[in-house]
Image (cartoon, rainbow, N blue to C red):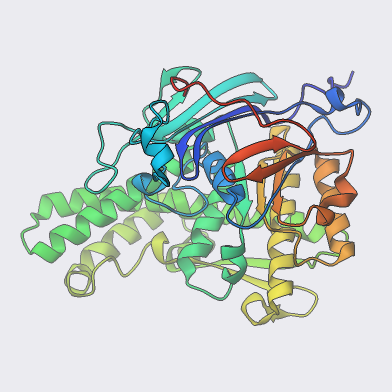
Length: 421
């Protein structure tokens, strides 16, 4: 017997935003498809946010992105997203909460049942500089790390700033790939954080010239253990993703993917993981003098790169047109969503900022159809509501205006109570 389509899937039922960039307080309630008379269609409705540039559409997607591990879709520091006072009216409004740290909370429906998530800047941390700390709650209980978010929600995004992903530095591509890995392996976030911490501490000690051998060995041991696990998880993700890309149909180009890096080549040689750990540990010890001068570390998964090409043309993605590169990115995201749907029972949340504006009619329709067929809660933004006309009656439409969320043809969304998180 098939499950009730109105209750399956992964989707945000209620979103609360407090003191986040242009939003003082905002609340958004979403409904399953059955509430819109679409019980025979997908269980989850996409969300369309339209409004002029600067209205706050991307800010809302960024708020949602902080319900996943990492620094959000803009890569911002925690203090950078605190709301900035914009007018004397803000200053005189006793209920504005001006100066309070930002917070985002959501009631999330999952295949396992409803969950409550909260994320925000620790009010004890300094938003203007110094050490910043992020608070995370799952079902009302404080969590020890961001991994707890990945255990509940999988999420990927595509923004206009990612249009140059294949042309720019490898760091952006690594972060993009790691975001995909989180959907399969929530512990990947914790391993990545531990690796980066050890990498920074080792670089600091080498630069100071006062690092004790035992402490350096301990940091390099941490880098080796976590680094091999990171590389192995990335390789597994690329292999799965390639199969899904090959199976894709429709107007989006097929991508050919590979992971390039020293550690990945060692693993590809078929050596046991423990042997590769020893090899990386030895390599780090040998490169201490070089790393002390250059900074960082000469080898490790922090130097790996995701290579991609347009499979039908046999052309590296970096040499394709801007439109082809965006189509390749969409194809990869859709392949990932199909994989998660098969393996975890639900597609990830998709945050698609201004994704439709530069797609032709065929690709735009194909994207919408794929989202609906997957049953994904995709959050799509744009300035022209006409770009989303094929979703009319199959999605929930909202208008964003100066930090206010208005249901299409309705009244402004209710304000969020000041004490909610």
